[in-house]
Image (cartoon, rainbow, N blue to C red):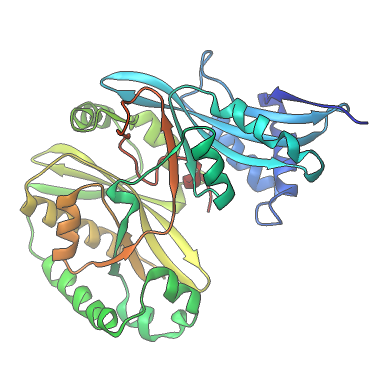
Amino acid sequence: METNQIVAIQLTDISAVAKYLASHTAGIYDEAYWLKILNWVWIDNPNINETHALFGYKIENSSGKICGMFGNIPVQYTIDGEIKRSSWPTSWYVDKNIRNRSLELFKMVAEQEGVLMNNTPLAFVETIIERMFDFRKADSLWFQRSFLFPLSVLRSYFGEDIKSPFSLRRMGILSIGTLLKIPQAFHFMLTKITRDNNEISVKSINDFSTATDKWFTAFTKYHPCSFVRSSKNYHWLFCNKQHAHRYKVIEVQYKNEVQGYYVFKKRRADNFSYIEMIDEAILPLPAKIQQKIIQKVYAEIYKQTDKESLLVMRSNSDAIQAAYKKLLGIAVNKIEKSYFRADFLPQGEQPFMTSLDGDSIFFQ
C-alpha cells in the first residue's frame, strides 16, 4: 500500500503545483496560466517575509508526486492600528483515492491565526467550514445587494449580444418594469455627469503613492479591521504587468485630499460583457458630494468602455446605496458567498470586507 504525507509547500514546488492544478481544473486553466497566478500570489507578494511565508500544504506520495494540495496566500489585516498576519486559502484539490485526507489538509491551513477568507464555497464546504472551523458567512451590505447601471443601453438590451437566457437571469433583467427603467437611468446619468464640481477629482490611475498610505491611516479610523490597503498591496494586486489590463482603478480626491478608491474588473458571462466593482474603500462624505462622486465614477468608466453592457456597483455604506437608488441604479441580489474567520475580533463583529478579500480576485 502506497504511503503519503502532508508537507508544507515550498517555492521550489511552483512548477509541480502548477502542473497538478492544471490537471484538476478541467482545461479551464492550463499550466502556464497557473504559473502566472502562483508567481503573482507568492513570488510578487509584498506580505511574505521570514515569519509569514506559508504557501499552503501538499499531500505527496512516496515518490514525491503531488496528490493533493491546499494553497495559501499570505496577507495582512489591521485591527485598531495593529498589523495582523492573515491568509486567503486557495485551490483545495485532492485525488479521489485519498479524499479521506481532505479534512486533515484543510485543518492545517485553517488553523492559522488572523483573518481567513473562503470565497464562494460549495454547499458541502459551507457546512464543513461553519460547523468544524468556526467560519462565518459575511453578511455586510456588500454581499447582499448590487446596483446595475447601463453602459450601452441599446446594444445591451435590444441587440444581438443579449440572446443568452443565462445572462438575463444572472443580472436580474427579468421584468418589464426593469427594462423600462434602463433607458431612463442611462439618460439620467449622462445628463447629470455634465454638471461639474471642481473640488472633486475622479481619475483612473495605474500606480499608488505615499498619499495612499496616508489615506489608509484615516480609513482605519472608520474601519478599524480591514485588509491593509497600502500602496504596496494595491500595487501588488492591481498593477501587475501581466494582469493589470483586467482592472480599472479610480482614485477619488476632494479638496486635493485622497478620499479613497474604486476598483473595477472586466467580466464576461456567455456573450455578455460587463464591468463589476470589486472594491470600494471611501471615507465618509456629505451625501451630495458622494452622489456627485458616483456620477463622476460612472462617467470615467463610461468613457473607457468597449463592449461592456453593464456597470455593476455595490457598497458597504447605507448612504452610498441610497445614492445608487437616487441615481436609478437597478437593485439585484448578489449571488456570491464569502466566509471568514477573524479570531481576534469580538463575537458578532466582522472586518470591513469587499470582493477584494479572498482569492477570487486573482482569477478570471
